Image (cartoon, rainbow, N blue to C red; front, top):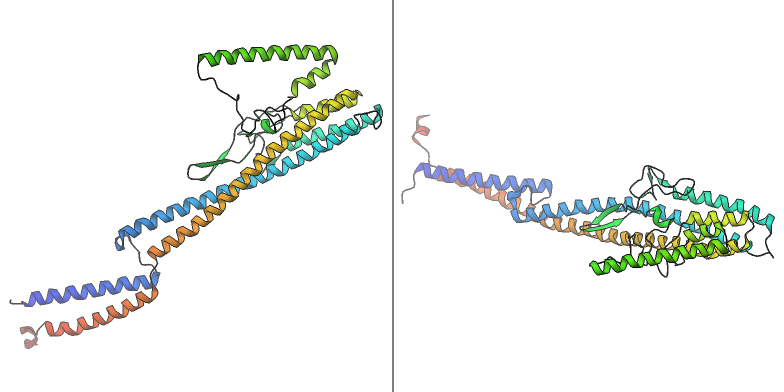
Length: 360
């Protein structure tokens, strides 16, 4: 086979180009300490590295969300702890004034002033805010959720934050649930009613049951009105007999404190004694809400640990795929340098002198 000068030149040029290109790639790997500097270096590994980086950034954002939610929940837990303490103090006062041996008209009047301060403190706790947002207002975080009369102006919204893929945790607990006992059940979830009718017959039965309960409540209130007077009816109307820890239902904490104050000011010993049960229920209601907040904090703490581990695992995975082996790169550089020198030395022998060399 005849080898023309052009063929020899093309072969030398191709080999030199390849060796210099390999040397440039190796030098780039040595400078960046990365085996993959562009997708064409290893398409499959590049796709896996990009997926790992995307997941790492997503997990980092989840951690930021969790840190924000944790501060919100911890502040809520602190506020509920203070609310529980003042309710315990109100119960202590009620116990001290529930009999004639330790209380009389004058002491009950003085104690009523302290109960009034406890009521005001409960309203202040209900209007706590973290930064620019009220913590017990539901979705309505820019306006105070409670008036001085205990009227709730917020909503029942749970502000949920994403902690993982398809996983959400509520970072707040509505004031209607804590202070008004709305929708409290064994699981602490706000709901319209425990069971939803599934057909027409169940709907009819449900409506009949509602009418029966309404009639029972009306008769019971009439009986209270005849035996105890308007103050007792008001107290009975806002106090649920079912404890939220053992059953379902709730009560208005502001009403409980206000009724205790009224009973003390009017020297109503029986009313003070009746307030002991409602105060116990109020304390249980706050403890239930606080336990729910605590369970959320534990859940996000566990999720945080998992996310931190996932971030580390993604970094390790990406590093194994894209990082260059320094010893291997240096060895390949020396090998490619020797090959390049050999190519340059042999190219002069492969390309023979032409006629132009003799005409110089």
